[in-house]
Image (cartoon, rainbow over all chains, first blue to last red; front, side):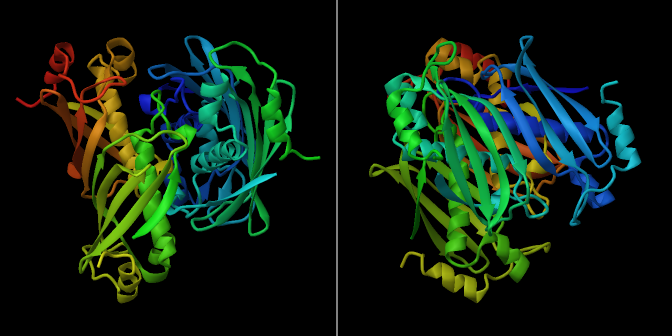
Length: 133
Length: 133
Length: 133
Length: 133
């Protein structure tokens, strides 16, 4: 599992002092970006260097408890690999409790092309190090 | 059904010229805000005036085709009412095709309180005008 | 002068119920995008069709009074044309009072190129309709 | 001077592969939030615990060279203290060159009150450690 800590900022929070949902989605999305950089296949390089991308086809999240400015939220990402797709499962914890969780379903697609292609072996190997056994 | 048109802006778009996912989520979220204003129960008033809110507990969206800067995307919202919760179903169309669709599940909760409460009759009546028969 | 109305949304607001500064900047930036579309030279087209852009080189804003969720803020934009640059002056009013004001300085530059070029005549003519006499 | 590194993300970038201006402003604003946390007076606490805030009254920024996804941008913040106000000067560098720079002018104000008050001694002392000699 890949993990990062998201500090909720004042500018993320609403009149009740808790994070706005779109700001939580920003943090989730940033986590996928950080993960891809960590494994050596940053989103900003794979299309340019390798000619493919991982567009999002579905996202499904549950919000279990609110987070406040100053909270240190540990967001974990676990990839589950298919042939032509990958699912990123997320679990965010704050003070030991789940704050939000869910997944993004992504497909592997040639840049500018139609339909899904097989996930290249090198990307697959890099992701598998973070997959569940 | 409630409908609004979202014009995708240059500042919403990515290196491929299509809208970033978090910006699509912003537009969806803005649609719920516009709907609540339209029916006379804006998010910014219900907690102050009526003492309750509609926090989000789940969101689930599918992205079927990308949208580009300048696209006029018609986002429709249909509420489905439960006793203590409401589901907002969304469908976004551009040039006649579905671009993205999904739902938000929201519960009715007293401000600062625990657990869900029944949706007040006046809010229920205001939403039902936009519900499916 | 070009004008648009920005409705401050719940998701723009902070624990004091007033708009976060970055959300105000989003609204200002959106106004420039709407203006360029209005005059027939949308940001998303000028580089593709005409091969130039209007990158921002400076922004300077004063925040005079806060705006709250539900406020209808009229944001006015007045262009002032130079040879190779344009300045967008903004004034935002809410209930008759100035809420924020300032300007963006932009240069005309060939896409991917170095240095500023003269503003093309057709763009100049389109902008001048909104300039101060 | 306080410094933090901002990694430009794919979701910050535009069709030319460079960061959208509003995303740069988000990063600047986040830097002020991180600074206040670093010195022990986080924005989310000062109003609640001490009854004052540092609302923004002016911002002025110059954009000297664009930043791209993957760029590691070092953003420095230097506070300059007045009696009832503070100015945060920013300079952002990438690969040794200034990418953008500018300042935010903030006033010290009692929460919910009118007008500026003197910056409390403890906050002043905490900021002065990062001020220029």
